[in-house]
Image 1: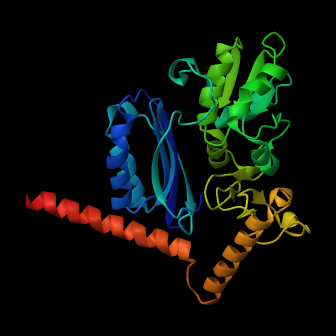
Image 2: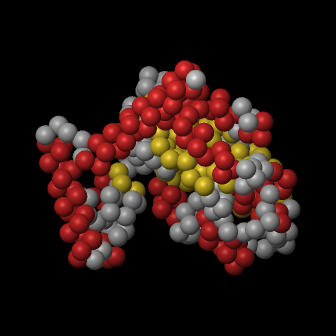
Image 3: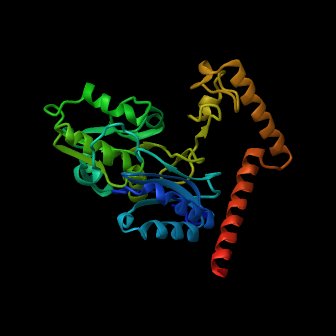
Length: 329
């Protein structure tokens, strides 16, 4: 990880009983704004999940606030670096699940599969009797995955249980090793597999990001880049921004090869979405891209980014005003 890059990107989660999660939203949102930390945090009755970015001091302050709640003291975190903040906004959302699988009555705190450290992962997945299963969505798998891993070809994590029901058998698939980006999807999916009767289920501790940080490239079984859910799109084996861009119409990751396609039009369409565009949407996206290009030529930010920054400054000023009032009362 390149320590010289000034922005710290922190990915974290914790499954915990939070019946009062709604009341946690506003204080956490204020703390993120106060420390100029951007990104998205999800809160649900089952716990917390987020990816945020900011200065070293800002990230430490926010994580300290979260861990001050005894239920979240053992928050699992992973970090990488970026030259610029990969987020434009600061959001704290209330959800039914912190990672949506759609299967009730699963508690990963008590049922999840066995953790395997990055240092032991190669040995496990090299065993021919172990089924190596990528729990991520198909577009993530296409960018990079472990050698010989099975791609479930899902469009969303909600489809994963149906894949298992149709393709896996507890009597036939006795040893299963699973992995995902940061570990959270495996916490829930391995718990669900154990509930379905699969006994020997493992998952990569800390996910792909932990593996890339811990295992040197020359010993790695990872091939390609890793998709991340922020404006970096992908990271390489050094956890630095990768080579992929993003289609601003459908938000799918696109390669240099995709950009050579006749179906690619910057800001308007790509090979993934060209056949789903209506004339109205295409015209709207084309106008948006034209405004972005004009702003860039003038050395200005696009109005959308300007408004995000302006609103963030106003919220920070409002928070400082509130604190001043409390101190004076």
